Amino acid sequence: MSYFIDRRANAKHKSAVNRQRFLDRYRTHIKRSVEEAVNRRSITDMQHGEKVSIPTRDISEPVFQHGQGGHRSIVSPGNREFDEGDRLRRPSGGGGGDGSGEGGASNQGEGLDEFAFSLTRDEFLDFVFDGLELPHLERKQLMDLEEVKPVRAGISREGVPSRINIVRSMREAQARRIAMRAPIRRALREAMEALEEEERKDPVLRNPSRIQELKDEIERLEKRLESVPFIDTYDLRYNNLVNQPTPSNKAVMFCVMDVSGSMTQSHKDIAKRFFLLLYLFLERNYEKVELVFVRHHTAAKEVDEEEFFYSRETGGTIVSSALTLVDEIIRDRYPPADWNLYVAQASDGDNWDDDSTTCREILSKSLMRQLAYFTYVEITPHAHQALWDEYEAVEQDFPSRFAMRQIVEPGDIYPVFRELFRKVEA
Image (cartoon, rainbow, N blue to C red; front, side, top):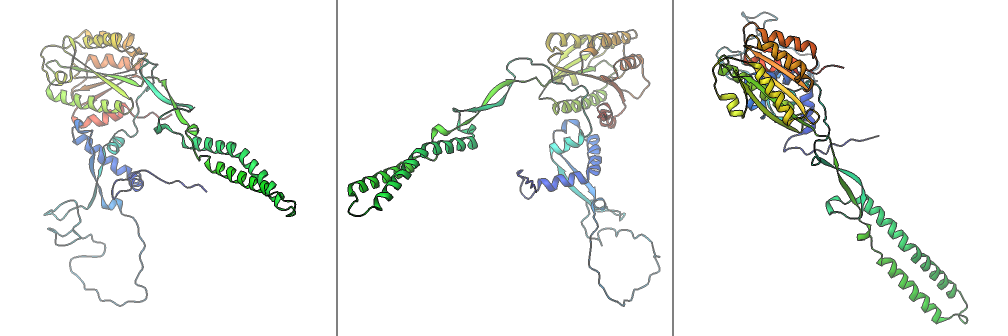
């Protein structure tokens, strides 16, 4: 029979095993609370955990109790208010009940008992991204020789104490002791046999000097056996590590946003939340993620994050200028053979009349052949315009690499994100 022992370090008064079992058992309730929290809070706070509550009626479990047993005679007072099967309302103000409710006091007598607990940051993000995956998640070829990973490469006689191989060192020590003691034991055994044979002789024929010589030899051999060290520096063996080049696990995320006069600050806030949510998702899948911010109105420009989200512009919109700039940046700094490329575009749908066709041509003929994924969110409650229609044609040509959705209000951000990156069942 095999025994599995959990050696994970637990925090004080906590059990990692029991906590994980609890999270798995009530995953549906916790996931619902997490989704409500994501819609309620700012995405900038996604790096923190969350306090969630579960109604106590959902975590109650059946129990066995011993009954009274036997026959009992009781007198029950009658009443003029209730009939059999009526539901009793909770007393108002706290005049009854166990007082353990999390719902707080209420003058309606409708408090609700809840069980509240806190999720850590990692647990919270696990529930946020549960069931999601990045399409075309790939490891690109080696970008430079500086990206290496230490790997085991056998055993070495030289090394640092932190890499000592105890099992191999003890094995070498045992082999050395056996090899060094074997001739000594053999000589000791022969000396003891000779001494025993000499002592069995008749006292007249015994040679006292020979007997003393054998005893001295036995004593010398026993000291030699004891002097063989249990372990010697010669026995030490170390794990040998070599630096092996590894494929780079890098991604670059292009944030493209319209900053023309039609894009209000509320539109930008919604776009910012979507970009940040996507960035957190990329961080969980790639070791290194770089951000490139491209803003545009009639002309496109690469800017920093502060200017990207908070600067204001006026004038019209030419989306193709941003797509052309992204294509140039990829060609100059991020070769597709070395980087996983993602583009997230946010707009209210406005564009110059004849420019939407140009956008489709840039995407179909150049960009989409280099990207791992392209997401377009249109932040508007109104009907779609020409840009949406042209993007639909691109989506038909690249159904696995291009996705587009509409966002009306902040509460749509998380559902839209889950729809864009839902895991495709094999």
